[in-house]
Image 1: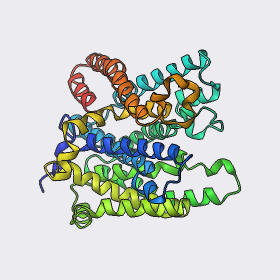
Image 2: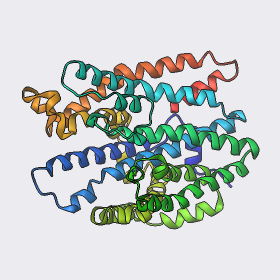
Image 3: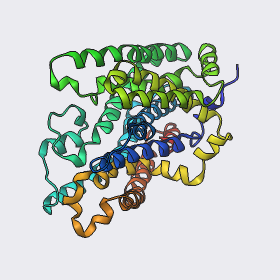
Image 4: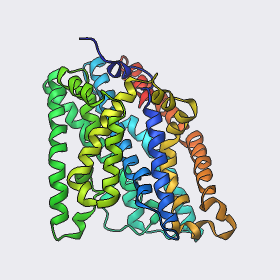
Length: 385
């Protein structure tokens, strides 16, 4: 059986459509935050919360992360016969940490200038990625770091599981074993969420904790592991026989979430939405020449997707309703719509070109000092991750 396009895509410098989906994700996040701010002075019908569901935007980010990281690790294992965990964590650190630490440094400067209240535990939990488990959430400018914490916790746990599975059972058997682990997480997570919310312990009611959202990333992992296998391909063909079925399921789930909130989302919504996102992601990757694929791979959309990490890091500072204390009346334009969207894009461009890109270039130079025979492959992986 020949490899599907998505499998071959793992060896490409950039997997088609992923940046476009990242652009969609960040748009949904920013749109929701804008609607929430507008809702403080105007009534917003529930349908708009369903259309611009920022939680689904974050969900798409998570599924992409699971798919991309797993695909890259599988590609490395296929090319080299093993996975270098030290190389993986170095690549991730140089990709993730510089923009975040730069943002936190700016917050500290704003605190020093008397523009922003600084709380030590919030800063520490943001810098060390346990914001989603921290009991203090006093700094509104860091409230979005729960998603970054979930991702980093995923990076610490999942690659080790995949490495262990592939080392014990190389090739397809190891992939199947890892997929069973991911599917087990997907099956058990709704039970964990429901039980946690029924317990009379307020601390356990935070749905941003990793054990409450781990399945959000597992959907992408399962797709990366099982694509190309006969059973998965039959299910995929059925689910995407009409391409708009997965997006329709996502929107239907978003409508139910807007109406019923956690009563739908915790036991059913995350599982239904995650499955649909995973199938739609794979369809987009395999169909870049379709109308949807051409939109997702358009130059401007791809550029927004490339900027999406920096946009996400900075967007709360400009979109949150409490930012008047930071910008004051003289800079009201950059703290209210549409000026705040323009400001986010400009600052993201600045962060991307003056923080992200130099860090990535430094990373690629340092990768050359790996032992001979691994440097070239590691540098190639660094370009994709």
